[in-house]
Amino acid sequence: DIQLTQSPSFLSASVGDRVTITCRASHHIGISLAWYQQKPGKAPKLLIYTASTLQTGVPSRFSGSGSGTEFTLTISSLQPEDFATYNCQQLNSYPLTFGGGTKVEIK
Amino acid sequence: QVQLQESGPGLVKPSETLSLTCTVSGGSISSYYWSWIRQPPGKGLEWLGYIYYTGSTTYNPSLQSRVSISLSSSKNQFSLKLTSVTAADTALYYCARTVSGFYYFDYWGQGTLATVS
Image (tube, rainbow over all chains, first blue to last red; front, top):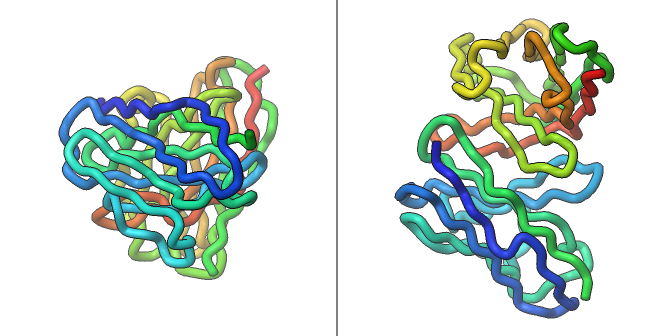
């Protein structure tokens, strides 16, 4: 199985901050990675797929980059509605797997 | 707008079978893969498997002997059965539409909590 390791697992930030979350894969996966936002009691929301493609309707302050084994999700200017948990998912091979999550909280 | 809604018993006894159904509205079940994903309390997400609209399935090997997914095109529904459950199967269970060829999840249900006790 491909293991995904997210860092940090928790971060505290202020509105307006630039935030970067990293996802590292145990094997090369090309650009086969997606990012999701998850809020308590809500369904996860797709933000980015194939490492850097923004899902329709997702604000442009979200961006993704990387390939191979290292990927990043960047929020250019954190907004109040962005405080949530973010998960990466690899699309490369079975079983499909997720990272452990990064919780973004208000400083 | 595609919407997914999970339904099923919230409480299952150990060693019994967990059965959940996902109803898809706002779009056809055809031409997509349909997945089940779960999240135990305080833990990460785990993909259980998916079914293609043709009926072909792929499961997570960690659960392969206990999991089955089926589909009813006429009802626009797909279902999960997980046999011989234990407390470790207690989780929030999500259904999700899975994009063909890429295998990311673009629409999710709100999730349903299944407790084994």
